[in-house]
Length: 238
Image (cartoon, rainbow, N blue to C red; front, side, top):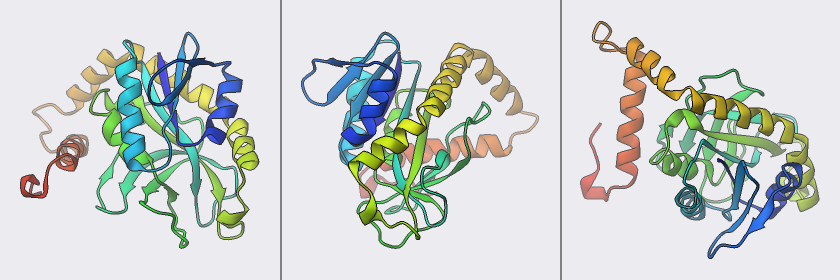
């Protein structure tokens, strides 16, 4: 089963229609599914995103991968541009995590900055309110290669946030549903071949090369994920 998370109903609706998903009766978050895909609407913000992510994973016995998809702001990118995250940073802590792109991306890649509240000042990163919490939570349960964030630009310096409507959101998401479909297919293929991929990565990080960039990044990711769920007194000193 492939999992999808959106924050808004307007983001979910075209995906539900594209994949012909049916409502699933659950207590808590709203869920839609077919035989291969299950989608949850989390609501906006990191807390709701993390809760919904855990909820859907707990609901699913055989999870092949998880994608968070939704709109995001960007200073210069054209409206409707899809971006697959290669870096996700939490604005409040300045900590970053790095999705493992072990396949050719079906769209441009870029950085995502997760903020706590709406920001009038735009940046060269896609700004959203869920990605960091989603990624941090999902990768506690799933291999990092199976967790990804796909954003579509909804506003920029030339077309500000107040012009965004639910209708436009659904239109932008509908336009990138084929990209999402391709991404889900690639993730499912990674899931099938994950033991071989892990073996290759372990070979790259052998004792002959104890300080590779890959190993350092993995260690950093692990420390950050542990750190995020500790109290201030328990924080790890990097």
